[in-house]
Image (cartoon, rainbow, N blue to C red; front, side, top):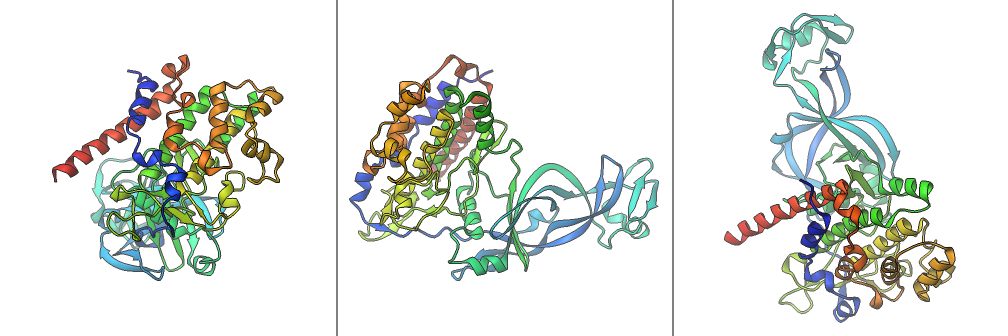
Length: 473
């Protein structure tokens, strides 16, 4: 049965937290402080190996290299000096899994990004009528399954590896972000992005409640040379590609389609605020899409927001205490200039971590609805920034450009992209804005909208159950 998107959005907005209503003026009354540290990451030791591999599509055995296998060793966590140290043994569940590096996609400051796939150790293996062919054994016919522990003679006879384990592919594709320990140490304190902190933030946001719109860290691995961040692959590319297709074909994205994606971005921001995390680099490139569901990636610049301590006047705590968040002392410029808030660009003495992410969301909405970037620099010397964000004449500009945009859409854009931090809409005000809550005929017929809302409803239902269980405990 199709789910009406308006009903699901009502469910989502009915659970808006008090934190989403806080204005800059309210936050400015308190002290500002440095961001909190994320909990230490959970990282397993691994080795890059060549394995015995069975391909069920070709019926052949061969050697597969560049496979990451977990060692039977202790779990590692980050200590105060920033290095990883062993803490406890917890790797047994990963002993039968491998992660194969298949194709390099791009380079990063700290290393490379690869596409790959997951392999698993076979419990039984078809081994009858095998004929040797170099390092590959060809399957003639399969009569029965033979236990892996009894097949060492086949492995040695057909020039397989001495290890008796044989692996087969799974249907799971992955992204592997590889960072050099040498570069991590060399750039620490000199470059804002930190591969270790990215994993810390991802694991922190995924503790017991992986969110459907946040990319998850499947596992973090390390050897003596590299640090590996392994994530699921989203096959539909990034949101920027989808928007550019619409801009190329129609000049801009329709309000209906823009609303579908923008609601998901707001759900992401609500989850970040709920957990006291500031992303600082929300861009179209950092939002990927999988089956019409967008997911936020790249947490290398993320900060953990400090909160007022419930007892100590000058103390700080995290979001779990439910107190008011504090403004963050300036951390310098960070992120893409197009999406950077003016207070971060100007390096104001303090900023609201949640507000800078909401500003980026406003820029994304502008690109979707107008078909171009609003400005090059978030500074008064940029003519468009001066007109839109200082003089607040966005409506006049849109009329002059001859763009057919609803009054509600123009009102939302204008009130999100205001230079004066005290006049901007809060997250709650954006989520409750008439344009965001609007329902068109297509909304109730849109299978994609139903998909994301049903996914979110499933997640919120699980959270409610966990919440009730926690109260009973």
